[in-house]
Length: 213
Image (cartoon, rainbow, N blue to C red; front, top):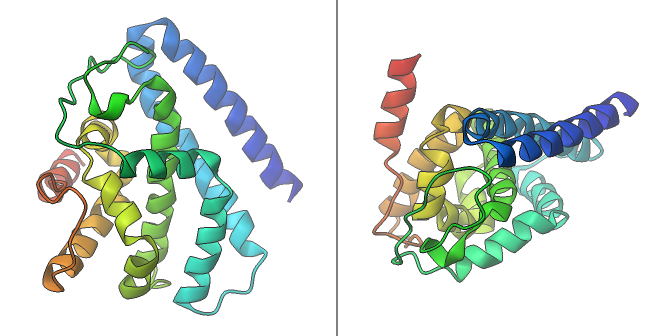
């Protein structure tokens, strides 16, 4: 447990330092943006592993219940979830793409630099769910009942697609693959998705990932 805590503390320090450097220069910012995603990916996996290790999970429903408890402890994810529900996805979402620039205007519901960490944490939560799903520990029906709208309100959001998922697609392989199966699941059952006019182009993203590798 002490070793796990050390990993968490070190990761937090690295993230803070990375953010500071990212705010100083554009070139460093582009490099650090990818680094931040990687670090938070590792950090998120460790935290969730610690939380779930303490419980005796036997079913998909129990696992999702415990994941929900982890979710409720994250103020950043809850904040972003509520903000996404209020977002007008039809607004102009153009932005300069420079990490650290707080003067981003005319984007969806005025997303700003301070939302970046919350967005990564939010996506990482579902990246870990994707890992569990493809490991055979989750049932898609239970997953949809528990986190369906929360998942698609982010994945179909234009700003999040352009700002995080598309440029750093290699970090979100499981979440993109999960989107493919989950999206088909909803289409087959006529379950509406938030922002149906801007679905994630998972085919293009997966093709880009595999061709690059």
